[in-house]
Image (cartoon, rainbow, N blue to C red):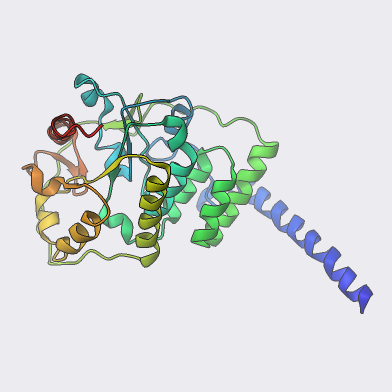
Length: 308
């Protein structure tokens, strides 16, 4: 019997090693379109690689913005600079509260902002966070926080990508830099991504409701608890979506109530007037004209209310 268990103990590491080799072979030699359970893509949409490289050098800013693509497309650090506000944008594609918590634990203390602006996009409460986790794992340097994030998601695709990222960090070369301009997107130093000016053709929507996952609500509460523990001042904002899309949601009051209970909250869907066709790139993202209106209003509030 002892011999049997001894063989089992020897066999398990062998199987794991074989499994890891298989993942490496997938990642190195098989085109990504043929792989469903591994996605290691450097410099994907949102240019997270450039943003994280810059984040490692940024310290002592006035404002740190964080959130989903609505954040990195919605907060233009150049506009805030005109008001004498030094800022950095740590947004990422499809960033859910789970990834926000990871990024804050990893970068907040080093960046050391006077104020954190959390862009609370209700849509991000309804998704599992896999897409954003893959983006971060592919573009950040390997660290323990990635493991914790992967365990919270419990996704095979995330686990495989994490293992490949570990392999790349140990045996691979440095991640090559990517262009600052890609597919109409231009990365601006400070974390903002400016898209070529485009206009959305407004459409009508059926009545609907925001959906949410309890794991994301809990993660949001963990963010607030963490910020209070380390004594970082913060506000919560909701970046505008098209007025027609916003009006189609019957439970906006639920989102407002949830966020109001967790800190100073500003819903800019209600604070500024925008036009679906003039101020938006698509239904969920402002174009540059909309960004300027939004950012000017936010900067005025930050200064008027002495928020930092």
